[in-house]
Image (tube, rainbow, N blue to C red; front, side, top):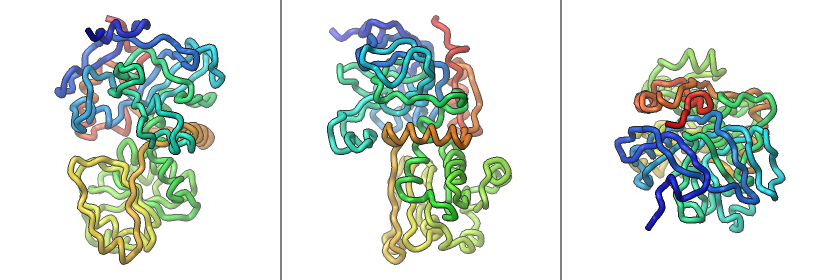
Length: 360
């Protein structure tokens, strides 16, 4: 008979979980594996709330395993290390992002692209190598292989920095990989939410000119005055769209809601690149003609490998790039999820685990 989440491992743990697609969270007792020779155990201090947590809680992508403890923007302090761990020591500040395992042998893994390994293990709601389900950072402690641990830069805020472990690497990686990081380039960012506002900050730090593209003018002041965007484009305004046609070298599309792609393609210069980061519920309609006549590229990108994630965190610390966050207690999580559905957050919730998560 299968053991319960509370008894399958030796380390007692607790957090908040949802047990079905209602997505309603409540306190939950479970367990973590003992610290192996290559493992790092750490006390969770903060955990960001990603839009993926909401999708997964409600099983909108169809592969959620319940009970679900989400959270893949996790930062904390090391409490124990395995005998062969070299990367960190007890007392160090560390992070864990979207993955906690991969095969470590395939072409992707040997090229520091563990995020594209076919055997990549997600930080939560995935099957671990021992057959148990992974639980994320809405919890008091984590145990992870040192390879998937990010060293936290000194004097870099843990609370505001936590969302970089997902939102940061998800936007940094495509800007780098697709060569949209050259000073003077014109880059469009579609959507000004958790991902979008971080994309603006990285793109600006690379020296590019940034145009925020949104369906309404409501965020214009915020985009230009607070986030430092160079211009703002209302995608529902035909005159504005026409005036901006053919001016962008690249577009980072962060929107998860269903939205038309064709108008955005018109903004690209010939040979321009549009990278999709959001996951709309319906398949996108992809017109071939504008792609062919302008040799334009549509691509996707998902998080980044561990080497690049460390590089991203170090870059963010050097350039003081921090997401805009609202710190919440864990017992606010159900309200936070309701607000996330309405995009009522600027721009990322972060749970103060250390102060608010108490064993029942």
